Amino acid sequence: MSSFTDRRAAPDAQSDGAAPEFDAIIIGAGVTGLYQLYRLRELGFSVQVFEDASGVGGTWYWNRYPGARFDSESYSYAYSFSKELLEEWDWKEHFSGQPENERYLNYVADKFDLRRHVQFNARVASAIYDEHDKRWEVHIEDGRRSRGRFLVTAVGILSAHYLPPFEGLDTFQGSWCHTGRWPKEGMDLAGKRVGVVGTGASAVQLIPEIVDEVGQLTVFQRTANYCAPLRNSRIDDEWQRRIKAAYPEIFRKCSETPGAFVHQFDPRSAWDVSEEERLSQYEALWAEPGFKKWLANFYDIMMPGAANEDYARFVRDKIRARVHDPEVAELLVPKDHPFGSKRLPLESGYYDVFNRDNVLLVDVRTAPIARVTPAGLQTAAAEYELDVIIFATGFDAVTGPLNRINIIGESGLALKDKYADGPRSYMGIQSAGFPNLFTINSASVGNFVRGSESIVEWVTDCIAYMREHEYIRIQPTPQAEDGWREHVIEASQNILRSQANSWFVGANIPGKPRMLLTSPDSAPVMRARRAEVAANGYEGFTMD
Ligand code: N01
Image (cartoon, rainbow, N blue to C red; front, side):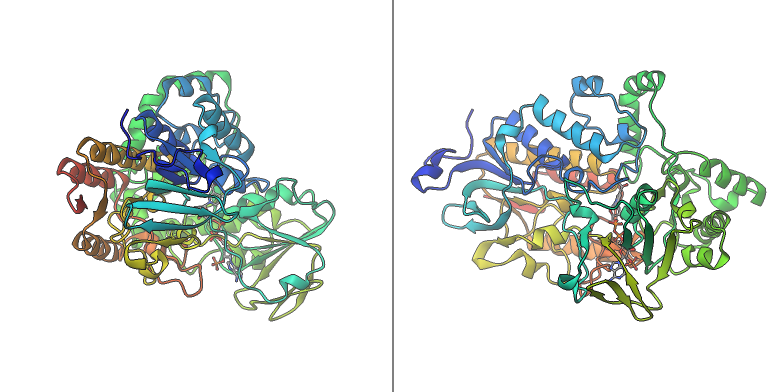
C-alpha cells in the first residue's frame, strides 16, 4: 500500500544517525492515541507513537490515586469500533475504577497488537516542522528523534498537572504528590497526618477512600463544589447481558446528546410543572446513579438563569442535610458559581467524611495558603503540621499539554506564542502555520471516548483523502481560524461552562487568558460541522 514516506530513512534508521521516517507520529498512548494508531495502521500508514509513561492508558495510567474512577457509565466509555472487543470485555462496575480502566486499555493494546508501535518512557521535548522536506521532526528528551509527514497530538485535555508555586515545598520534611502523578508504588498514608489541597473532582473521589487509613485528615478548601452521589454498584450477570445486547442503543443515545453522554435532557422547562412535581423529579433523579441528576433533568437547569438557581438551592440543602456541624456544612455549600458550571464531581461518602473526629476542613479562601513549611502548610491564619501533602490542584487544561512541548511551525512560529491569548485553531483540530499537525486533544466535547472517536475518524478520513488526491500538506486558512475563534468567544458568553473560574476557561491557572478551551457547541453539532467541512472538500483548509 502506498504511503507518504519515501523510505529514505527506514523506521529502524536510528542506528546510522538518521531519524526514522513515518507517515504519522502520534504523541500519547491514551484513549485517543491508541485509537488513532489503530485507525491509521488499518489504512496501511506507518505510525510511531511516543508515550511519556511506561505503559498505555494516559489519564488511566497517571491518575492512580485511591478512588479514581469513571464518572460516566463504564459501558458508555468503551471503544465502539470492535464488536468483538465489546463482546469480550466485561465491565465489573457501573462506574469502573482506575485499575480496571488501565487493564481495559492494556487489553485493547494487546488485542490489536498496538504496543509494538509505541515507544514508552519517551517524553517529547519538541516537534519542529521542516519546511523544506515538509515533515515534522520530533525530539524525545533522551535524544531520540523521528520524522513524520503528519503529527497528531493525542496528549489529553487534563494531563498537564498543575502544582501551585507554593514557596518552601523543597523544605518540606514529609512526602508529597499530585493526584495526577500518583506514584505507582503508592503513598504510605497509614496513621499519618495527611493534608489534601483542593476540593475538585479528584479530591472528592480521593478523600473518602483514604479517610479510614490516615491518622488525621486536613482538607484545604478554597472553593466549595456542588457534588452529587455517584451510587456505584457491581454489574451482575444479568446486567452484563443487558449491556452487551444494548451497545448499539447505548452508542446511538450517546451520539444524540449534547455531551455525548448516555442521558438525554428532559425537554420540559423546570417551570412547565408544579413545584411539587419539580421537587419530585429532583428527588427521583437524585436517587439514581451517575450524571442523571445533572444531564437528564429539566433542560433549563443547564442554562444560566432561574431554573438553574432553583436546582442549586435543592443541591445546597442536600449538602446541609449530610453534614452535622452547621458551620462546616455552610463552608461546604457552594455560593459563588452556578450549579453545573464546573464538571459535577460525583461522590461516594464525601460529605460524611466531614462528620468524623479525625477530619478538619480549612477554609483557604479567607486565609490562603501562604507557604509550605518543613513541618506542613502555613496559611494566613495558622500552621498545620502534616506528614503528607496531597495536591489535588488540577490541570493546565487543553493547551497546557501542548504548550509543554516546544512545537515550532512555519517560519519558526511557536505554538505557545500563537496561543498566548488563548487557543487559535480551526474547530480545535488544526492551527494555521502548523501544517499537518492535528491537535485532536483540543477538539473533544463531553464524554471523552465518544468525542475523541469521532475526531480520530475525521482525521483518519482526512489523511486518507489526502493520500488519494496526492496532497501532502493541509492547514486551515487564517479566515477559517479567525471565524472559529470569534464563534467560540461569542457562543461561549452565555453557556454555563463559562460562568465559573474553572479549567473550562483556563481560570484555574494564574495568568492564563480566560477563554473557553473546548468547543461551545454540542457534540452532534460539532460532528455535523466537521462532516460538512469534509463533504465540501475540506472547506476552510488549504491542501497542496
Ligand atoms: O481539578 P480541579 P481536579 N490554593 O481544577 C484547588 C476531571 N476529573 O483534578 O476551585 C488552594 O477541578 C482548586 O480551588 P478553586 C473533571 O473533568 C474527572 O479535581 O480553584 N486551592 C480546586 O478545588 C474535573 O473537572 C474525574 O478555588 C487551590 C482544586 O484545587 C477535572 O478532571 C475525576 C489552589 C482543583 O480542582 C479536574 O479535576 C477527577 C491554591 N493555590 C477529575 N490551586 C472522573 O471521575 C488550586 N486549588 C472521570
